[in-house]
Length: 181
Image 1 (tube, one colour):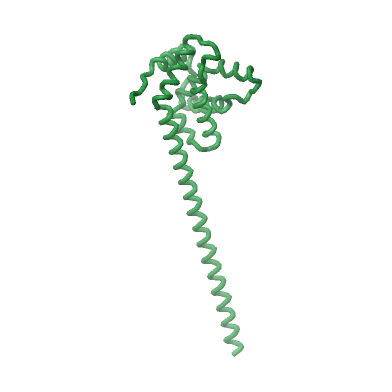
Image 2: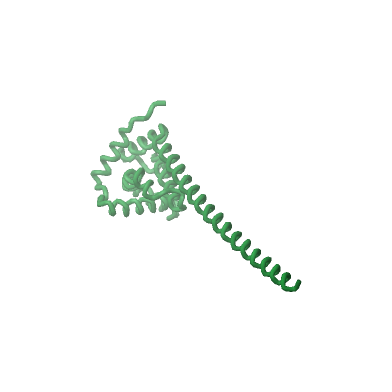
């Protein structure tokens, strides 16, 4: 009787250990699945953000904003006459990228050309705005995203735009056709 009790106890211990092992294995599998799901969700969020920014960039309103800002810069308009809508777009883009809500290479591929040139065109405006407001943080996400894009440009053997290229870029932006409704 005592021997069967000992065997029964060992069987119970062995069964319990097996159950613990299987539970541990299932928990690890669940954790792996949650990590995969989190990665998929993060990728989907980045893609959705990209599509949202692309739609905003290509919108009728933003085409009109880009056109107007380019016209004002080309005409040498005073500081107070220049809208910050274009700068705000790239500031938002930079903040999303800094926070990891954007895929950097995808953002560079879509917006890099424009960001680098708009920064070159608006840099003096930003510096004046920082000085006037005694706030060196103004448009720092725009500036940071441009630096990241410049690094990617260099990796792809692209050169910094010249003043003439920036001028031509602004002329192209000033000549943008506003999409019809």
